[in-house]
Length: 265
Picture 1 (cartoon, rainbow, N blue to C red):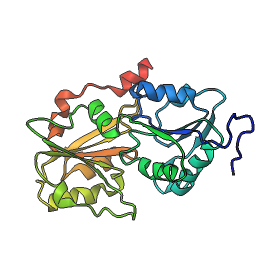
Picture 2 (cartoon, rainbow, N blue to C red; picture 1 turned 180 degrees about the vertical axis):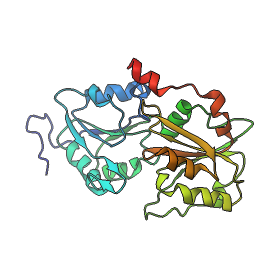
Picture 3 (cartoon, rainbow, N blue to C red; picture 1 turned 120 degrees about the horizontal axis):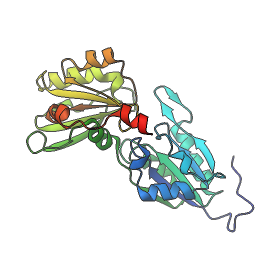
Picture 4 (cartoon, helix red, strand yellow; picture 1 turned 90 degrees about the vertical axis):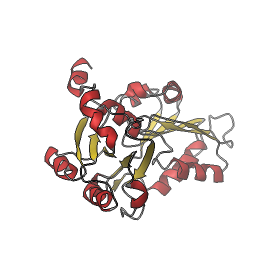
């Protein structure tokens, strides 16, 4: 159990927890406010998908706590993280909870703030560039386009109970882009369900692994062949799945060269 800091002016008063979006990976995509808070923080609690170099912005004397979650491997259970933030707010004035992408888009940010609110801990939210926007931009296709997609849908490919039981009828509609977070393990099922509920097998689809970073890899195919091509390429997490007509623009609009970025870093 963390004890209140005796050197603090008002040890009985909670500090502020800043729920900060760390962006999709490239540290240049941090917001100015996110970078400023990371540099000011007394303590940072950070997730697995924080881009290289972002923690370098922290003060040398800041406490750094890893609370990352990988597939079937959680450093701290979510309930423990929620209560850790409450404890840290009793010890420090500035607590930064640093999450990949945007904390309110499949980042469990709402769950953490519910606990803080219940305990009377002040908090603020700093949005970040969500992975869908960052990965699509760096992979070379828009998420919306007047000719291809008038609707944009974000879905999780991994529900709390471990299933992939989604509203397939709503997801498998034409003229929209669907982005699946945390769905690589269920890619085959996602493709089959999208086809079974009405999308043509030739619907453009793709996967972006470690988007916006020097390790970015992109596979573009169609729903019928995407799983096989992803397996052939050896694509693993972290990665996002994209489905929709905008993917056909990728060969024309691709601009980011990870190898060139690595050589100039």
